[in-house]
Every structure is written in structure tokens, then in C-alpha cells.
Image (cartoon, rainbow, N blue to C red; front, top):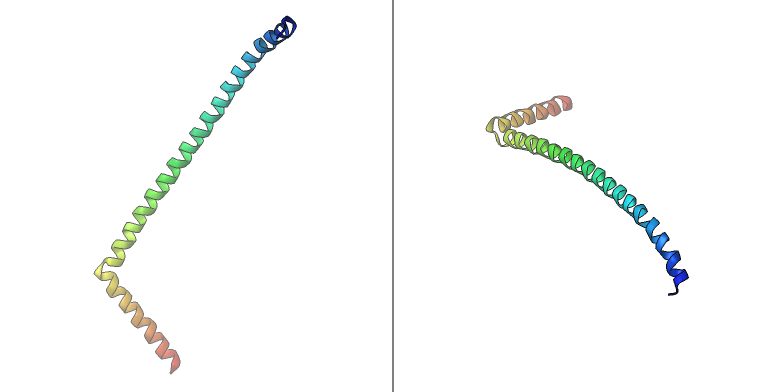
Length: 88
């Protein structure tokens, strides 16, 4: 490298350093915003999953309850009676 090239590269590098620093700061801020948005989305998904799990628990309790079994048998008999009465 001769002196002319070195004289040309030093100012170019001196100007590039702040530009790169600004760019990296900007990229960091963008990633922080993305992380925050993903965090909020994950929190909403977790809340939705918890709600759905609770609903499934309630439905399981209803289905395994003995009174539900009796109610479904009565409903089945009603359906059978309605089919029989329409045939006559």
C-alpha cells in the first residue's frame, strides 16, 4: 500500500464508522420492537390456550357426569319416538 491509498482509506473509514454505528443502533431497535410484538402475541396465545383448556375441562366434566348420560338417553328416546310417530 502506498501513501496515496492510505490517505484515501483513512477518511473513508472515519466516515463509515458513525454510519455503521447508527445502522446497528437502528437494527437493534427494530429487533426490540419485533421481540415486544412477539411477546404480546405469545401472551395472547397463552391466554387463549388457557381459556380453551378451561372450556375443555368443563365439557369433560359435563360429559362424564351421570346426569348428562341420563339426559342424552332421554333425548335419544325422544328422537326415536318422533321417528316412530312420523312413520305411522
